[in-house]
Amino acid sequence: MGVFPDFDGLGGIGDLRAIVGALLTFVLIVAVLMLIVSAIVWAIATAHGNYATASKGRTGALVSLGAAVLAGGGVAWMNWLLTVGSSL
Image (cartoon, rainbow, N blue to C red; front, side, top):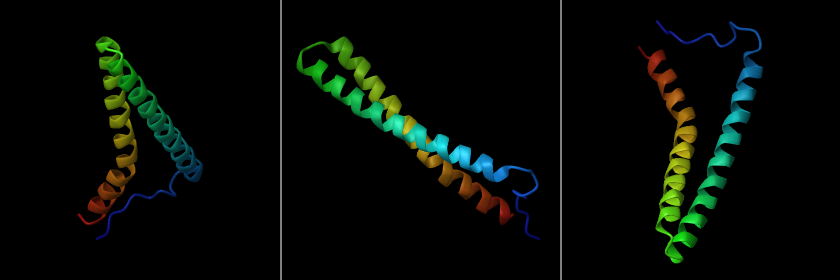
């Protein structure tokens, strides 16, 4: 017996997928831009000896890296869950 979610059961599910895809793209672009900005701030602050600002730049870089990983891995994780769910 194959159990799979009925994505056509709701009206407008195609529009919802398009919106989620656009938001995912937006999140990934913003996360990568913030990673670049935070890394630049971290490098400049460290070079000038301002360790408080360097710490904030490092935190920003790590948070933006985590956001990019979570946003990028969310689609793969959801596809894996759908595959596991259909094989139960």
